[in-house]
Image (cartoon, rainbow, N blue to C red; front, top):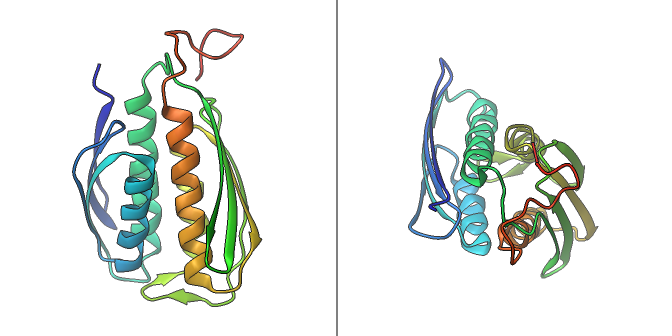
Length: 193
């Protein structure tokens, strides 16, 4: 069965078209925020997902666009996982990137929780305000209905820290969405929602 989802989100503040294939495919990202594009490409590549995103925002400070892309990607993840039969459910990864080291742990539990223990020494990464990175992940887990811990172990260079966080999440997510070897739902309740 194809594990794909599409989200078309149009508000007074943003317009987003997103296509996700959990099992791979084309990657093409084009939003008004180039550093976010870079991070989404890294996520897609390192998670083994196909991801197509086009997004336009109101041009204020990119807050609405960054958050709404997180909302759209979270909804797509939730929809593409379906009943979550046969997935590993859990994934953890620690990713180094030069001076940075970030750990990520994912539980595709159906319940959202974010522990974002990442700090940035500067306010802007190109056209992306660093305060918006937490907002992206909050929107992602709330709408994807999963548990994510992102913990910075080391690092001072904001670009490296941010990229390590996205890649650590991607690799942990890749483990969690992978096959478990059975068609069961890995929960004593019999469902993950």
